Image (tube, rainbow, N blue to C red; front, side):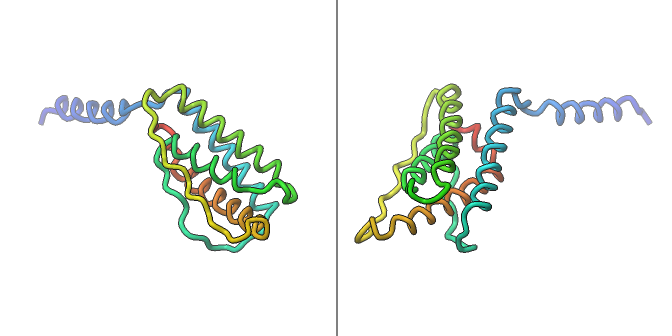
Length: 156
């Protein structure tokens, strides 16, 4: 039996597996930073805020543009009057700004997600804290989804 042919086929298979779409150092660094920022924010939300365990499913991830749009939308709905919220909002803005800067530098075509629908409350002043807590819960759910799907950061 000719072992050279078997060895050659094996080496070709190993080389094809090893050379599949390498991740550039910039992409790896970006994903690492976004992961760290998102994990810190989820930890802060868990520690600083108490809310119900279950919520409707989070928004879909459709690339960096939708991540920026969703996080900006939720951040705008969170009231600054709740204790410890200004720091959380600053962290959400920092994460959003980082992803947006990455997107602007990497994407020639930007896919935008339509703006989030406005909630219609009869008296927004009466429900501002409830709406803020719901937005915080949704940010947490969205960040958990992002942490599970960091590859979405590479798409525009």
